[in-house]
Image (cartoon, rainbow, N blue to C red):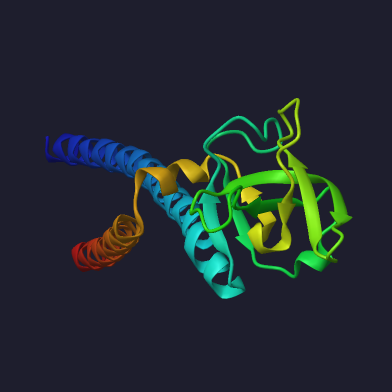
Length: 197
């Protein structure tokens, strides 16, 4: 009789061990999926932060959002363009620039240069047009050119239009705090698991 009990106990222990192992594999898979999701989200946020804050600041450039369809399909609404001040003499037909359509007016437009000329007084002037526009803009002079577009990132411009500079700073800080909290939680959980085994 005692031999039968031992055999039953061993069978029960094997079943429990198999059940725990199966739960561990399922938990491990979910944990892996969770880690991949967290690190993917972190990577996406870091790309957005780099594109909108870090890289422009390091290059002395300005991030701006495309608000209209005038530059479609190259730069649809919601595209983030980073425009860097350059010597207007270095600009050529085909370059995309950011300019003030009216001198000393804060409104900015980002369009492609389709022509350039020297005025009688020697000043350089540019003719621009949006890629999606049928007509050219009024010619502008060198002093109206704010910069040349050095890169653009689709959809990221929406973030800059939804959030002002201070809000973006808070968002980056909050995400950093969440990431640190997740790291601490993961380390603590691993330490507790080691203590149990």
